[in-house]
Image 1 (cartoon, helix red, strand yellow):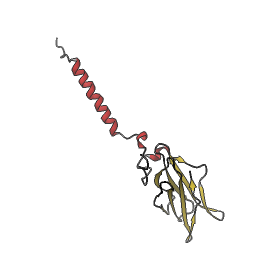
Image 2: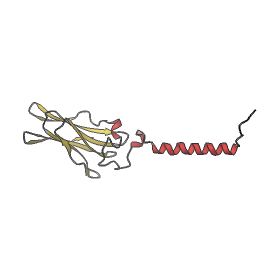
Image 3: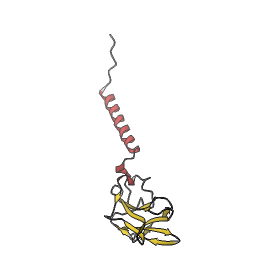
Length: 156
């Protein structure tokens, strides 16, 4: 009859401590949506998809802004918001292609704006700004038959 060697209590404690340490280290390497948040203004000018901030995105206002010419809706502008990251960004949907559309967001305090993002495709979104304790506004533009039309600022 063979018996397995006995392991001391100290060895068990050491193994348990090492295993716990490995679990903590592994958890630090895995990004979760809860860790997608940004430090104050840490996400300014970053892509909401790359930072995982878009995972819980919703519209920040009850209604979008419409860019119209006569009875034709040229584009729809939305101000998006992530509660996890506390950020906002603009999104524009082109309703009459091949119009050129673009969107930007800005914050008054501390003053910051994002570059304009857009093109002639169906939908575009821009970079995000920290919106905690600040008002963020999105503005869209459409170039239709050589004339530029702008939305009213959509703020929250």
